[in-house]
Amino acid sequence: MKRISLIFCLLAVALLGSAQAKYVFYFIGDGMGTNQVLGTEMYLSELKGEIGRQRLCMTQFSYSGQAATFSASNGITDSAAAGTCLASGKKTNNGVLGQDAQGKEAQTIAETLKAQGWGVGIMTSVAIDHATPGAFYAHVPSREMYYEIGKQLAFSNFDFFGGAAFHQPNPKDGNKHVASENLYNLCEEQGYTLAHGFEEAQQNMGAQKMILMQATDGIDRNKPSYNIPYAIDRKPDDLTLEQIVQTAIPFLAARYDKFFMMVEGGMIDYACHGNDAATAFGEVIAMDEALRVAYDFYLAHPDETLIVVTADHETGGLALGNSDYTLNLQLLQHQHCSAWILSDKISALFKGNKPKWEDVKQVLTESLGLYNNVEVSKEEDATLQKAYKKAISHKGNDMKTMYKDINEIGALAVKMLNDKSKIGWTTNAHSAHAVPIFAIGVGAERFSGWHDNSDIAKLMLQATK
Ligand SMILES: [Zn+2]
Image 1 (spheres, rainbow, N blue to C red):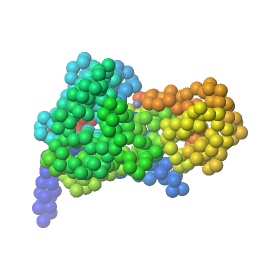
Image 2 (image 1 turned 135 degrees about the horizontal axis):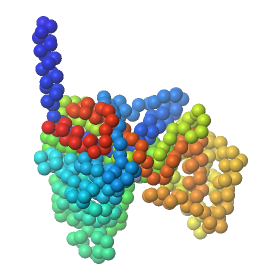
Image 3 (image 1 turned 90 degrees about the vertical axis):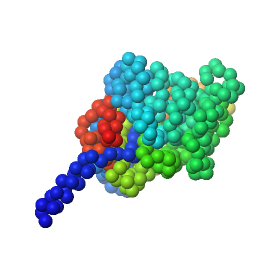
Image 4 (image 1 turned 60 degrees about the vertical axis):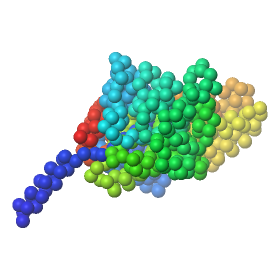
């Protein structure tokens, strides 16, 4: 009896060892360093009045590791070089998309699997021609070549795209009335159905290929589109990353017996560029919600599915702790909109107007809880009022962040809330911090330990063989 069970065990090990992943999910949190993940878990725990971690889906995966992210040209990578490396295993220079450091086309895991007959989906919460998604299908010397990247998307023959639409729907200096050159038209010509919002996508599940975008994006085919709204600013009809994954899985599964999906939480990076922790944690949670959809799929197909979660780099140099032996993350619960929207609200008050300080203060209370749930000292009040007086005399210094300028009052107020929560930021740009790797499913054990970001795509491909 013992011998039979031993043989059975050996057989099972042999079978497991030879298992191949036929459903591969690649989740990339843009700018999601270890502290973005841990901070989110500790914040959720503090909300329940506890010290500890309320576990996200990703950190419960069976295997975890870390990756270094430096590019070929610098210790600190940008999203183009990092995306290229995560997609192809080739390090390249900052700013370069889909080419190696010598300018040679870097074949991506998505292209390799597509060539082997797999279904492919690329999705993100930012524009589908942005650096991370673009790194999986485009090959250009500069990530800024948005029109060219979009054109390569149209001819990628990938099955599904989801996110915000195109940065630059028409060629630069091109005549926007040349309809055949417009990217939306070009994509339709190449067999893509454009679905505006989740509902429209559900009605078009029979489409040959699909691009799913925010309901309003791509309606005016000449207007640029940048991102779906932050989770913290979300309105009921807004498209979510979770809905995109909910659409992509059945779409691909109905057409292919093997598929690969890249899902980017693209706005974690945007929030961290603005040193806005509450918004960043909301984006980590939004990506984790999308991940749960893939995890449910894994539970139904555990012997054929591989899910890997990682990041392209860390953004902001986020530190959990900025002064003494305290963390007070729960204060962030009083923030009800992103720094972007707060800045817009304050700017709206000043538009052709000289608002009273009380009006500005009310916006700070409604949006961040300042003066109400969050105590403001005399000195802090004086700092805010000084910025208010500068704004009244049009001398305010906007904070320049990568994706949006935040007016001085809004930037100061958000910084105040972050300081009080005991969160530190070292930069408005990226850092060289290591990023986490979480993996579950077939071949997941390969991702355990310390890696370079150039290993990840290679290890994923190995798991499909
Ligand atoms: Zn970035």
